[in-house]
Length: 204
Image (cartoon, rainbow, N blue to C red; front, side, top):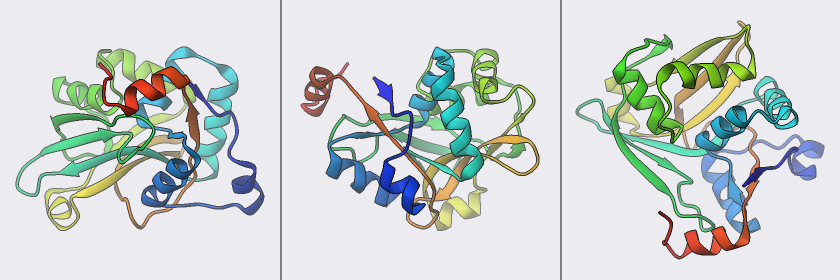
């Protein structure tokens, strides 16, 4: 699996941004997997400098819209995280997990760890996860944002985006309205055999 190093030429040329909903359709039409939060995490963990620098440019320019979606429970803090949501290329992966309310600073506890493990589809502990994310900028503070309960009740379906804000912070936002907020995205090239296998619903 390989993340495209650059956006589609059309996107760069015309400075196009789309919602998660529109990006999903775009990559389905191209027969390509859309980037997910786990893809970004794996790229950082693998340490490919070219990919990391390319993603950092995205984070500077705009939101990086992923194919990761969160469907919040209207009555409590439980939620379903879906990676590769609505993809026709790969089989979506789902987690049910408690998602605390955050408005910035990361609380390093077991609850946060379980959430981040589901968000990035990893078994790494919280120290490792935060260290991996720091590869996008050692000097940057990591911030998490999730909606409060009243907001979850109003709009339970949200997309996950990542970006650098204007205050020197790397922000993981899990409260974007998937049909309204626009940003950049990119495709992920996967092995054709893997694609066929997953499309048939036989992935592990």
